[in-house]
Structure formats: C-alpha cells, structure tokens
Image (cartoon, rainbow, N blue to C red; front, top):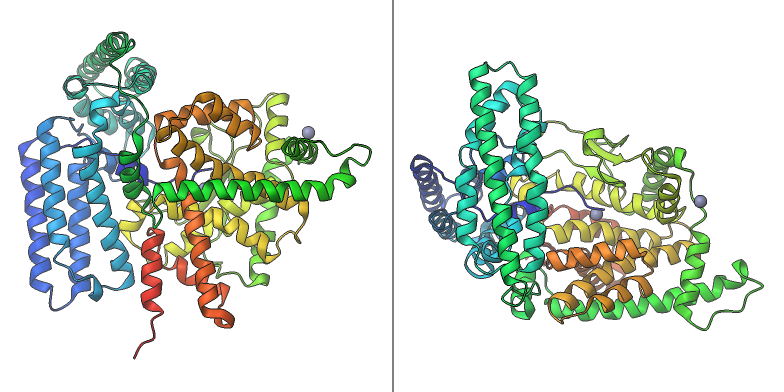
Length: 606
Ligand code: ZN
Ligand code: ZN
C-alpha cells in the first residue's frame, strides 16, 4: 500500500517548461534575489535568510516545472505544457546550478534542525535532477516518459475552478501538444522494447481524453459555440499528434525488435547512482541486497519454526511435510480462511483504529495527538480503481485539515475475487495493514511531521523514510507485545515482511544480476508465498522501474538498525518513546540525515 505522496512525481519530472522567454527571465530574477539575500543576511540570521531562500526556491521550482506544480495542487501555471526540448533542458540545468550555488552560501551548522533537514533535501533533489538529465537520460530510451493525458485529465476532473474556466485553461494548454510530441520523437534514440510497448499502450489509452472527455465536458459548459469550436479543433489536433506518435513508436519497435534495442536492465553502475539519489541511504545498493538475502533466510527459519510449533494444533493427523516451505504455505492457506465477511470489511477497520490507539498509549510507544484525528471512510468513487486501503494526507496547498483513511468496500467484486482478497487480508493481516497505514504507521508519522511544517519536506519528502517508518512500526508493535506474541500473528507478519524483503532482492537481481523471469517467479511464488497474478505483476513492474521497489526495505532496515545501535549505546538510559518522538520530529527527511541530526543533538553540551 502506498501513501499518497509526491516524491516520485517531482523527482522524476525531468521535462522542462518555459514556453516563453518572459517566464525564463522571471526565473532568473527571483533566483538572483534569493542568492543575494542569502549573502547579505549570512552573518546575521542564517535561519530567516534560509526561509526566504526556500520560498524563492519553491516559487522558481514551480515556474520551471509547471506539470509538477499542477500535481502538487499549485495551479498558477496550469495552462502551460512544458516542451521537452534541448533548450529547455539546458535552461533547467542552469536553474539547478544557480540554486546549488545559492544553497552553498549557507552554513549548515548554524541552521536549526528543520532547516538543516531541508538544506540536505534541496541539495539532493537538485543533484538528482542534474544526474537524471545528464547521465541517466530516460528521455532518450523511455518513450513512456512522454504522455500528456494525466495533466489534462487532472484539470478536467479537479474542481478547483469553474468548468468554463478549466476548459479555457485546457484550450491554452492544448496549443503545445503537437510540438510536445515532435520534441519527444527528436529526443528518443535507442529505446527499450519494454518501455516502447508501455508507451504504445499508455498513449493509446490517452486518446480518450481528447476524443471523448474534453468534447463531453464542452457539451456541459456554457462557452460560446465559437469557443467550443476552437477547443474541439485543438483537441482533435492533439489526438492526431498522439496517434502519429504511436504509429512512429510501432515502426520503431519493429525496427529494433531484432537487435538494436536498449536492454531494460540498467546495470550496476547506474543502479548504484540511482539508488543513491532516489533512496538516500547509508547502505550501498549491493549492501542492501546482501542484507535482504540474509533477512529472507532468517524469515524462512522463523516461519518454519513457528509452523513446526503450530502443526499439531492444526494438522494433528498429518505428518510434517518434507519440504518445509510447502508446510509453511499449507499452514498459511489454512489460517487465511479466518477472515471478516465482505459486508463487514470497512466496519472492521473502523473498529480496530481505537483499539490500536489505546494500545499505543498503554504501552507508551510514542505521542499521539487527539486534536488531529484520523477519519476512516469508504474510498470516494473517483479515487477507486484498485481495491485496498490508503491514507489521504492533506496536501501542502490543501486547506483541509482532515487526514482520511480510505478503505474500499468490496461491492464491485465477484464472490471469488472477494474471497481471495479477504484471505489475503485475513484476521491477522488486516491488523498489520492498519498498523502500517494508520497507527502508528503513515497517519502517525504525518501528524508528527506536520508539527514542524516544512513545505520542502511535504513536497520532496523521502519515500524510503515514509515507507520505512510504516514497515518499522509493524515489527515494533509486535515486539512490544501487541497481539500477545501470538504465533499465528508472527507467521502472517513474516509473510507480509517477506514481501518487502523479496522486492529488494528481485529489483537488484533483475536490474544488476540479469535474473531470468523463471527465476523471478520462483522467488516470488515459492519463496515468498505469492499468488501467480501478483508475481507476474511484480515482474513486469520490476522490468519497467528501477530502485523504487527497494525503498520499503531500505527505510525499515535503516530505522531498525539505528534504533538498535542507540539502544545499545544508551543502555538502561534508553527510552523507546523518546527515541520515536525525536526520530519523527525531523519530518520526512531521509533516514541518514535524521540519524546525523539526532546524533548531533545528543552530543553533550558543554
Ligand atoms: Zn505504505
Ligand atoms: Zn472465506
């Protein structure tokens, strides 16, 4: 389950804007101001100077990334479609370098902890985007990075101004679509087959926005016939440009299919670099991979031990199978039958939240804030699309204070689908899901994070820290005694945890070690107890993306190891609640940065 956050959308946004000279000038001006301010106030008050710098940075960042601004709910540049041209890329690199230069005027030792965290995050974000543009260069080999539908769909479906106004915005934005796809074709040199196929599929899917959704919305608007005619014409031209792009890709695919395509596996050197920028870890990718292998073996051992212990209770008449992992699978399947019925699913989640809350208080694990309650609700219809649960955090430009825990009722499922889903989220797994999503996982982390409000951290928060905390909180709860050390709960937890461990092994093995599909499916199905559909989906995802699948395990391992080392160093002085409260007080900064800042703040003051 993924927390809705913007990290990846922003980090991966390499397409540059500035369709007019006017805008690029104003970028330069605001950056210059920021850097001057920084120099002038340097000796006086680093923190207030840094605040001004941050504001100027965000403002310029939206100007050069209008698409990211739109996704973040900042609508000032909603009518612009950034063109992926070489000139715009160059201009973006200049923006990055100018900002890095201003950033380096600050003395990090003089910044408070909130600003120090933001300093590192901005630096990493800028260095990462520079690396993406100059070295990783997906714009040359990933044709699926070109797709305009999402931005248009977002404007069409978000009620941030009247429909007429949104259609007028769309009309302006449509102008650049043909030029956008021409620039795309210009950029693509040697694509991979896999990303070419994905691009064909997704851009075909995009057509509906221009042939159906926009014309339909025009029908409901009160624009004049003349205005409607203009939008319709532009929309048809956009659809034509997309169709041409798809045709070009099909020909390209034909040409490269017998040799000449780029391998989708990025190899060790690029993988290590991408890991460094996307994850921000004290481990190297290779170290994390080795750690995941160890964890998998350790989890298998524990699961076999638990299964041996429980075997007589559930299978008294049956000898313990020779293949120990098959025995584990048999027990998991047997236990999974214990689940809530489909009608009661959402109510059961609602029932569990106060129980988790009471447990956390009683066990004194960390601070909760009753003034910012979690609202459990059925997932709104417009957000459904896949089943499951997710936390809907208020965005940085979103005035709503409520945090929602969206749970999708199983209404649309066939009896077979519902049964399969309910077995997956059985009596024990559902508790772990609620720990992960809500308490003390994503929701609690967010409440703490909002106590030191930082626009930088809400926009560029570290995904490995956010997911790592949620995964860490599962084990921490069970260790502290939640569920009374019930072996069945530990067995289900181990299967759940095995998923994040195996994601790391799979990603590294595919991208660096050349793992075959057959071996990949064996890993997921026979060593991690996954169903075939889930395993096939995971394989496909790991061929199309790199590194992201390791973020959960990395964050978990870093937080867990850090806690253990602080515990050891402090001995009887160690207090778990204090540790958690301090750890969470740094917002969604990368774990290595939180570690550094916590170590500094714990140094004895003379
Ligand atoms: Zn999560
Ligand atoms: Zn059942």
